[in-house]
Length: 151
Image (cartoon, rainbow, N blue to C red):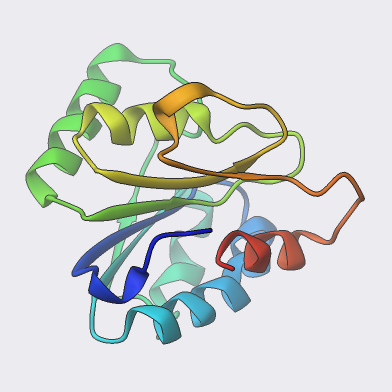
């Protein structure tokens, strides 16, 4: 059971995949906006998705991140952690695709001091995700998977 999101003021949504990945996240962004009311939603996307994300009315801010979903460049990751810490997010919602782990991004959020980190994974990753939603054992469409994360 997810925490009550209605009290959140600043929420970070992470979808650093392809354009198609972001498109499949749109229904979940709409749902999240309904749940969050007037909270500020910042969407972190990859450069290839930045044009689409600017057009989404359910988000207030867009942050383009060059690093993807893995640790590659320590200086870039430390700069991201610093930026997220300064933004003082109440919550991070991490959307990943089948076969991708939310744990690298969740760890960045953990190091940035974001107290609630919500993600979906088949494997348990300890406390890196504060709210771990186990994937269904059956194959589901990514749109349904993203919506399931918010229920």
